[in-house]
Image (spheres, rainbow, N blue to C red):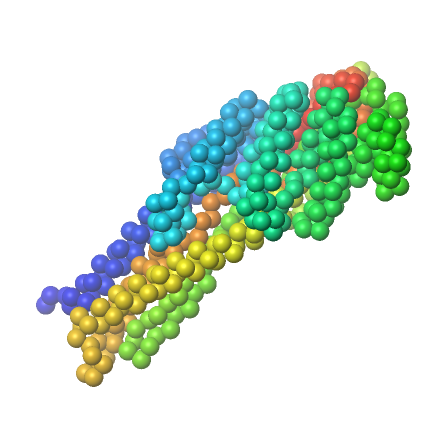
Length: 459
């Protein structure tokens, strides 16, 4: 006996569902388990080779992510030149994607956003320049680092324009603070004071929006630079807010800036709210959307004890504890929230179009089966149910949230800053949970300059 034609159609629809699922889903991410393990163990060479050997898994539509991952891993590995090369290439590609293909957008509206090339979330595009600034700062190139810090400001102004000023992430206080340090290191004290002032204001917004308090050292820097500029009123204001008194002897010192990367950044998962209702003929009617959501991978309050020892006699010269400077997990969640309105609009419109197409297909199936509602049998109802189920599978398979994200980011940037007389020092750092300890010898401090030490603790 030959199969029922409706049942054959059902099987063909199920096969189509599988094909569409494969065609529209994001790049596979299974190899990230090895990347995460390498990062957690500080084995960045292995993590870099894992990413490199899976270059094809990213695909052309996620090639930006490949550059971002390689750039971050080389940064942690202490290869600033390789890191900058990958990050700058990724930034150029993001810029090229800014003018998007109309046909690709149309296809994304019908299928899902995974058919579009990934050009990063707003905070990811900003952090490209933060990493680049730190690469240049670590190499002792403050002018080049400042170019990257200025790009942060330009990007955030553009994003605020696009959101008509209604987005949460309009200022990057950490980048502002880095700018202040860099300006001070180049002797541009007035620009440093302005940058510290904007960092102070930015952290006011950070406290309300992301729960990140003002690092106290910002007040110290405001008092110091205001004092150097003889801005007496401003110096007194920030001293009363908690800043350390202005000490003129500090002009002959240099500063050690410790940046610690704590924990692994958040990842996106997919949520699929849907409603299915069977009518009296056994036909299923399903309305379904798929939404991305950030989930944290690090929730701790880990901090780092920094101890600085003189190279000549190993005596302790200074100590400090890091404080939170940038909560990447909190920013990621808010940035995605800002886009949810657009995502709902696209997903809802796409779901409505698919729902109407599915209903039309189900109606055609019912006509082929000869069902006019008057002579319906239990077999007809079963056929209708299976056919409508297959149609809904096809529709559901084409609906997929874009869960691509820059997975090699840290969860937090922490910072400590101490002023020291010029000389050679050893820097010892340890996490308060005992899981991280490192010593860097021969750290040079120069008068009036800032020396950056970068710590990686991506457990």
